[in-house]
Image (cartoon, rainbow, N blue to C red; front, top):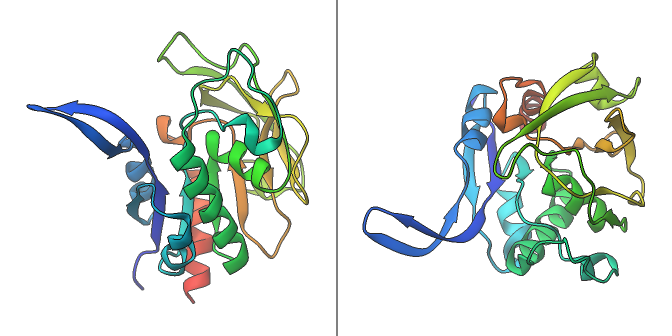
Length: 229
């Protein structure tokens, strides 16, 4: 059977390589590595017109909404906190459209960090715009334990308390419609959310692409393979 094709969203940034300094669609190499190690094929999805989202999703077996910039607070009806980062409006519009298309089509969906926050916002939830203790130094991953909620999809994948790589300063405030919390940090921060079956929709607040544990991504790839028939 062919390997599932997993789309992964990308950053859109000014970047330098060789003699070039240009706008670039880019993604940390850990994301495609994690997809590959989990049995899938990675396809990078740079920001595009939101109207194209349904067509793109129709060609995928699974979708990953990657980490990155803070979600613009206007998306959930809030004024920006001074500590909220600059908006990434093209990504917000594109990735919200991808989430909507994936949910409508039943395409397996995994959100990572920003991806969890954007899924929550897409379903009517809100965010805490700043919290401490969930990063290392600037540009350095922190680590902390994550405790699964028994009976959830996440707990079926990772039944034990796990130490995870983490780098975020925002988190879920009001939970989006129909979402279930499936893991917490010791301080009570929501660390994973999911939608009930039959959809395969799971989002985690940490960065599995920066670690060695493939179980969450393997769950997505397995769901994508099952959907392929």
